[in-house]
Image (cartoon, rainbow, N blue to C red):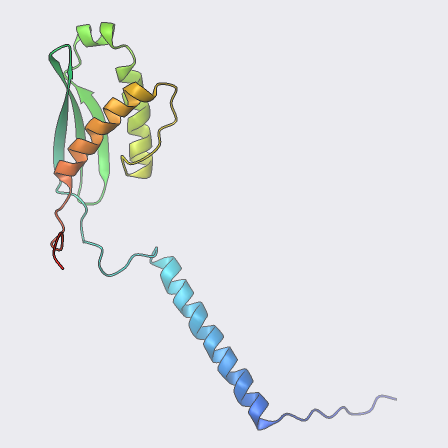
Length: 148
């Protein structure tokens, strides 16, 4: 004996449900737009770097060793040591392997402001500082620095 069930819906309840549904749809659309755009705002400059190769110098026993960073407009392309002499290799054997490790991390994260995973923090710190110096030369200056 199943009888017909009667539901009574008040106009006030229908309006509330409709408003909540519309609010939820708007919220979902906003979240999707933010997630798909990567959270980037309108104020982000079109390019991060001035394309080219920039170098920073490290003096080891009064002999220069250059850290070179090559960038495109929006990406760090390569990080490497140049002018590495045999004397550097003999007296500073950790520089080349630490530079290779640091370069991989910089390229992976597209930033030199990282915490490298290393057992040689002093050597890596010297190299990281040189990479940061080279990248500072490559950065596009912001038109609003210091202006209010």
